[in-house]
Image (cartoon, rainbow, N blue to C red; front, side, top):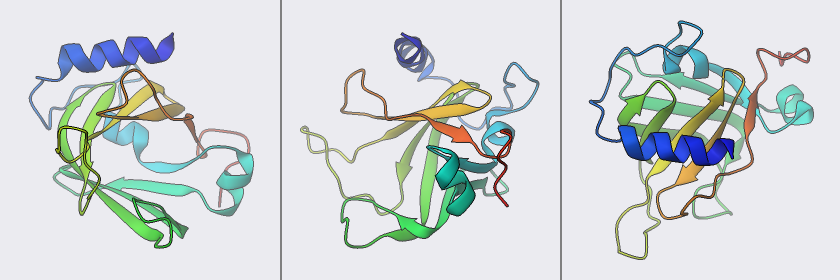
Length: 148
């Protein structure tokens, strides 16, 4: 049910101007909340978390990991994925991966929506997935098993 609320928020606020300074409920911008390390579980957080950071103008989001992240070709993991931020709100970012080659059924490059579930977790929604969202990632920085 939480995911449906975020999908509805995404649809309602998709026209929000980009690069605003809106604050999350803890008085942090979404950028401040996301800046840090993330993983699907304790093991990933300890071994190889995803480090999220932003360009100074917040128009680019970086995901870095030693083992690499998969895009469309599973044989070529990328140590860094770069996302272009297209729109934002206090609880989501609409993005596209720089160099993305996957297409929707309509022939358009897929867009990725980062949906903030709370201050400690988020999931990804792909523009052509309907209401589906990925397994949530959790903040490694705000849990007892902090990644070093």
